[in-house]
Image 1 (cartoon, rainbow, N blue to C red):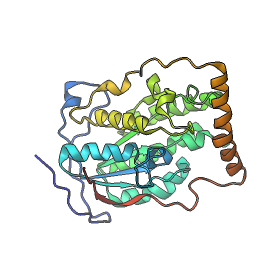
Image 2: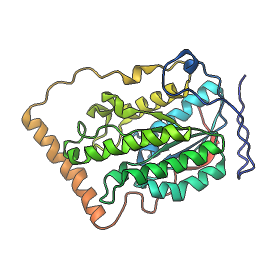
Image 3: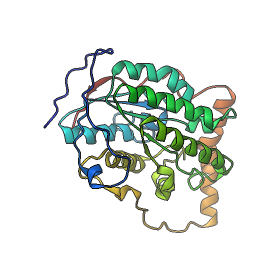
Image 4: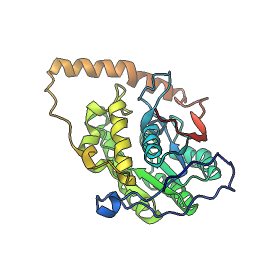
Length: 291
């Protein structure tokens, strides 16, 4: 059976088709059999879901959510897709601002990814963040959506200065695992795979994946969702990297501090966010265009 995506109807009158939920990322034969057909995918979150830093060659960003939507659309023959994510958003703001819109769009496939901006703030509270994520998961699952969430990779291999934040990431990931097991959402546990923290999959700012990283995330989601043609190769490590000399490391750290860390600190000291005055890049579900 092939699904032809119906035009966007808007509002809560849209009824998502009933379908089984894909198995938790195990690799079983049942997991690999793709029988689920989705009509509408809505992504909510912050800058990683928005697609930074994966340029689309048109002045914007592509990102793993776009890539995942394309993979689903290619397999099914069509898909409607909206991306409500905005850079700099905390979990509380995603819950307050994006969840109501997502619920109104009535997706039957949704990704909920949040937490990194909270980790960077003095007010960090892993339990509260996980509770907000759980609220979003429950609301979307309750409407019949397949909901995918993932943990945060260890930031230290990518950004050595983030060592004091490692404990926060560990606490948040543990809380995310706990609540996701209770809500009916599906967890993709990136933190369990060291390759997710390979600096070669991260952009120059060390906060966002690069194009290769976004491609891996999309492949991991496609595998977790049970799309044919995807396996666990996304978990495999990259080839051993050449060892850098001390002066090369120092030069790279100084350049990163000047170009990224200091501007970020200055912006936050002024109470500004990279997402101020920005809107979602794809606020309305539109058919995915395949090239």
